Image (cartoon, rainbow, N blue to C red; front, side, top):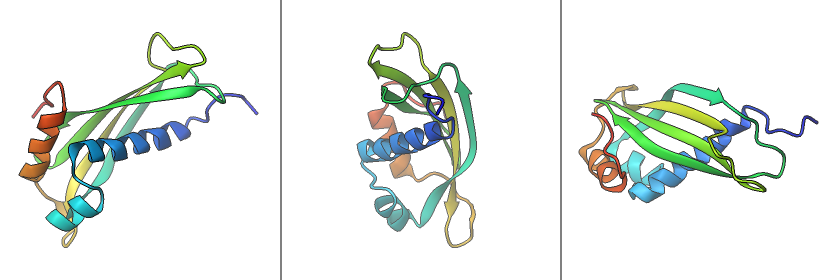
Length: 130
């Protein structure tokens, strides 16, 4: 056992943060978004930078924000910080995930719904790039 978090697990932590972001935005995912709009977001790209390792039993904070709302894409930025036993001064991991909104009937990109744009704009302290 290396006593550090396996690199792929950070994406699981990030996925949990995305789910929490959808709750904060107020569009229940998947039901509230998929059923209401007939579309879904699929991961197109993930970039992860491993700056320092978290250790077994560390308590971590995963910070997430929508950084860009494209025509049919949604980009999230992430930082993962150690909270306990000793808070990290800088992120252990940074990441960016790009999702594409897809119409389920055709599986083709579809513009982001206006409702999603408005709700994201209401919750982000810094407006996402357009």
